[in-house]
Amino acid sequence: MHRNPLVRLAVVLMAFAAAVLAGAAPASATTDRPTTAVDNIVLSSGGVNLDAYCRSLGAVYAVRYSASPSGWSCQYQEGLRQSLSIGQACQYQLAPLIAAGLRVGEDSGSDPTQRRCLVVGSAVQNLGGMDLAGYCKNLGRGYNGSTNVGGVDGWYCTPRTATSRIDLNAVCLWQYGSRTTLTPAAFFLSAADAYRISCYGYR
Image 1: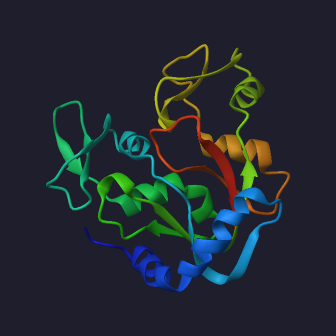
Image 2: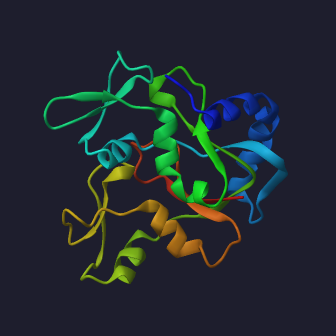
């Protein structure tokens, strides 16, 4: 898999950041203040939602594919498969952080089922859980709650329609955007675990 400069930078910085990730990052999940360090520290940003990335390309979902350098490909309705880049999937998933000036890439793991996104910044904080039902009701449109049909990609406002899938980053911005100087984004360790999601703030 060809790595772009942002990805290569993240990999180079990982060695320098090992102590931070081992100590400071987990602590941020239980404190009200952001974990801070010098600029350009690699911060883990959790798992990657490959299904959402594939859907953004016009595909149906992501599938394991040994012929792909990343171990994954996007499956299209026509039966075609296209190899996907974990780094590009991370950049799609964490677009709000890129818009805020942070750098986003992938980790250097070799297990396709355990890949992670990385953010290069100076601080990370667990902002809290997501009020999905409240977000849906705030949208109006007759929504009265939320439901899940599988994985972090499977959250919908109810009544469920083809267009009521929930953007988890949008939930974090709605819920925490006015309450923090950090840039909020959805956080999860596994895209398969729909009920262990939260919002993290980055700088």
